[in-house]
Image 1 (cartoon, rainbow, N blue to C red):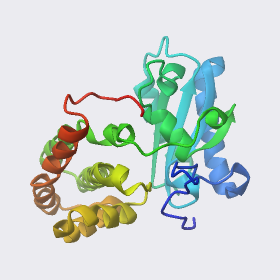
Image 2 (image 1 turned 30 degrees about the vertical axis):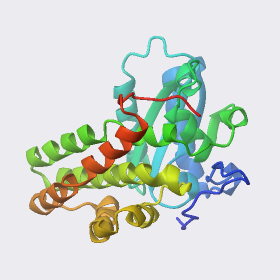
Image 3 (image 1 turned 120 degrees about the vertical axis):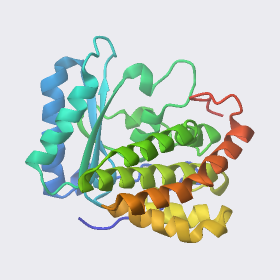
Image 4 (image 1 turned 90 degrees about the vertical axis):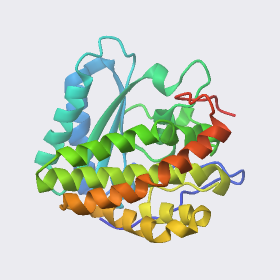
Length: 277
């Protein structure tokens, strides 16, 4: 799977455009993976399913991590969705072992298009990095995305709690595979959160961790070495719990304060989502 542009395209007004490949440009291998996911979604939801999207690195033919977004016509009777998402991800990875990681997420129509005008993470992701693989493509209803504080807030609010939870998990896990997975998740969450703190000022969007680190370092140059290490950890993780915990302690010494400073300025009430402006 080949590399891809690390900064997302933007229109003349600075709004972020879809950075994914066209469906016809995806290699046959990726199309096969996407069809497997779409079949699983249709088996589970049938006519309740509106559409399915491939996101993540795989949507850009830029890596081996796939994220599938399922949009339902409504959210009624949504019992067992977490179990389905976990089982579907395992099924896809079993059928396609070349995948490094796979996730499924489900959203109701009202979560993609909230009536109160608040920011929708699902709508943003569909708009900036997705390929429709089943159903009617919603991107025709989604305008190019502005990089406002509402977009950043989704990755920043609650960041400290998510990082602490991963820190506690790393203290509890024993197997090398779980340490590697948890350390990788910690690094990815850290980079996404830190990048969100500078994104609206820099007015660029990326999902590439090395590019995130370069832009974060413009605001915290003293953390340049730490950020470089975070990039490696986000890509590969570490099997050493001692190494992981030492690194986590270092990140926790500055990143929660960095995030809180952004929230104090942009979302002092710590609302989970804020209105688009």
